[in-house]
Structures are given as structure tokens and as C-alpha cells.
Image (cartoon, rainbow, N blue to C red; front, side):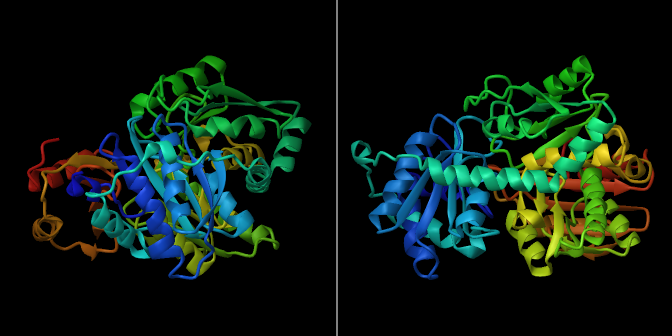
Amino acid sequence: MNKEIIAKMFKAYDMRGRVPELTPEVYYLMGQALFEVVLSPENLPTEISLFCDARYSSPIFYKAFAAGYLSKGGSIVPMGLATTEMMYASCIVFNRPGVTITASHNPKDDNGLKMIKAYPQILGRTEGLEEMMNYVLDRIETFKLDLTKLPELQENIGEKAKVMSLLLDKYAEIGNLDKSDEALGSQSRKLKIVVDTANGMSGYVLPEIAKLYKNVEFIPLYWEIDGTFPNHPADPFNPANLVDLQAKVIETKADFGIGMDGDGDRAVLVDENGNLVNSEFFVAKCGTFFIDQVRLNSTLNFNPAIVYVTSYSRALADSVLAINGTAIPSKQGHAFVKDEMKKYNAIYGGEASGHHYFGQFGYMDSGLLVIGLVINMVVNENLKASELCKYYEDKYFVSGERNFEMPEGTDFGVIKSILKQEFEGGIINELDGLSMFWPDWKFTVRFSQTSTKPTLRINVETRGQNVVSVKLLEILKTLDINN
């Protein structure tokens, strides 16, 4: 096996690769490594919850991981098909590590691993994933797995029901479900929403969520679970994958639409006109909403603090500070945002990538909880979805995250030096890549931590609507990147 290819599968906070390069042998050794180099040495619980998504490669990888973990003396509670937030919920319910076999929004031929060793901390490179990678690389060339001897895993229905119960309880809490449903009833109206799961794992939970409401009609779009993603890829941040959702919202005259990713931990919002709501501004709206919630509800034992990602719009930091909240900057990525939230006991954290982190959910992220949150805001603030972020749309102008594939071996240090020299006079922040700030604009460049190929991510924000494209082109020209 090509060790170099396998090494590239290990990202900042998960593992992702493509079949057939990604093999059952890798998963078996990862199971051994989790026990041998992470959980046992750190005296953490060695009974784990194991989940998977519905990709065609997941069943064999699920068994292979279990076999490797069991071979070292660990104990597994098999949970079967689930969204990633169900894995997170299991860590809360049972206070034990969790693992799920998934490649999130990646194409159908990809797969991967997400692991929690002690919630909310995802198991990333600095928490043991680096050591697990080295364990695999040291053994993979000579190891061959007998696929006929993999264990048959019986799903633990009772424990899985407890996981689902907690997730639904948190949905009701964050969505202020009773008040929202009651308000709709008193107005003698129903809310109508379209949810597109792209045949991903959110279709496993959404029928249960739909039962919680009397006055909300859910219009299913591709809720049938199918890991080949036959209708469109399960990546809602590609505009091409939102076309069906936007059309369905208009066709049904829905109040809004939600697009989910493959494993259910990300969500994007489409308004009643079929327009995509800017995710950077939606995070800002959520930030101010949760600051208000902390101050209004004495049972919420969190600080009026929001964690935000520095590479995106200043809208969140500006608006949170304006209401005397605390805005805490973070690098992008699960591990970093969750660390900061736990450190400061923050009520909410958000990324424009569609990850929303909830203090009430153990500082962990969930796309499904976003649905309840939007219903809560739309109903109880008496707003249309198109009005949620209007303030920010009129004040901040953003390019959105632009991605550019770079040649192998590209030196990010060289990129930073070129930009610092060309764009002198800006305030420099290197918390996450390189950010440079001026009174009327800012930009951030950083390398992707999840892409399988070297990818430069660029964000530009200006105070003037017509300036964004000009500034972006200046950066691309400076770096000799073809747009």
C-alpha cells in the first residue's frame, strides 16, 4: 500500500480518503491505534460507541474498525446508522468515547472517521490522531486482514434510543419548541419548511423531529437514506446542490428551506424567496440571538460569549460587542472552536461553513438543531427568513470563501510573505492562516485542513458592495492565480 497516499488521508481533526486506497486494513489498524495509543495510555474509558453512515463502503469499514479495537481488549457498543450529532449525543449520554465511519459531505466513493475521546473534544492531530496515523503507517505495508473473520455486530437498540431521546430533547430546548408551536397555534397558522437531506443521514432523524410539532409542516426532499447520493451530492455549500431545494421552496410557498450535508452536522438556510441566506451573516444573527437568550433565561448557565472564526466576516464580532457580549476569535475547525467554547463556557459558536456549536449540546455542532433554532427565531421574533440577516446584508459585503487548488508542495510561508509585502499597512493576524485588516476592508488566506488536494481558501470583506471583486482580483493577481 502507498504510505504517502494514506498519510494524506489524515486531516487536522478527522480522517478522509477514497476507496479503494482507503481499505479495511486501515480501519482495523485505526481501531487498534485508538485503544493502544490514545484511550488506554490516557486512562480514558475503553468502552466506545460505534456508528456509521450509509455509504456502500461503511459496513465493511464498520466491522474492520470494531475488529481492530476488540483485538486489543477494548469494548464496543454497536450503534449502526446515525448522523454525526448522534455520535456526539452518545458521548454526552454515556460519558464515553464515540466513533463514526463517515466522510461527511464528500463524494460517495470517499469515507473516513470522526472520533471523540472525551466530549466535546474531537480527536484531532494534537489530541492523538498524529500518533494514530504513525501507528497505521508503521504496520500497513505488511498487514493483511482476513475479511471472513470480521465480527457480526448487533445494534444496541436500547442505548441508541437513549441517544435519540437526548438529541430530540436538545432540539426541543434550543428550538423553544413548545413556545414556538403554541405561538403558531394562537396565530391559527402553520409554518411550512422544506428540508433537503440529499439522501444523507439526516433522513434518519427528521421523521422523529417532524412529529414534535403540531403547527409545522415538514416537506421532505430526498429523505430516503442512500449512500450513493442519487439526486445530488450531499454538500449544501455547492450552489449546484441547492437548486432542487430552492425550486421546492418556491413551488410549495414554504417559509424557508434547509439544506443538510451527508452526515447531518452542517446546514444552510434558504429564505422564502428561494435565495440562499449568507452563512457568515446567519452566524452573526445566531450570535446576538444567543447572547439575548443567556440574559433572558437564568437557567442557561453560560457566559454571554460567542466563539467565531477569524477568517470570515467582522459582522459577528461587531454585533456581539455592540450589545456588550464577548466575541472570542478561533481558528476554523471543530477542535479549535469547541476548545474555545469549553474554555470560556460560551453559549454558541459558529462557522460560515455551516457548523453551528451549541453550549446546550455539550459545545458540539449539529445541523439538525439549526432547524429548530430557525423556527424559533422566525416565529418568536415575527420575522421572515429573508429578514433574519437584512441588517448585515446592508452593511457588510463579502466574497464568500473562494477555493483555489494549488500545486503540490506550495509553501504557505512564501504566500504569506508575498501578501504582507504587497499589501502593506494592514493589521496582521496569523491565528488562522493570514488575515490583514484595514478600516474599510479585510482578507484572509489559509490552507484547507480537509481537502484531499492542496487548496487555498480566500475570504474578502469590504465596506462597499462593488469593491469586493476588485480586492479579490488584486489578491489573485499578486499570487498569480487564475480566477
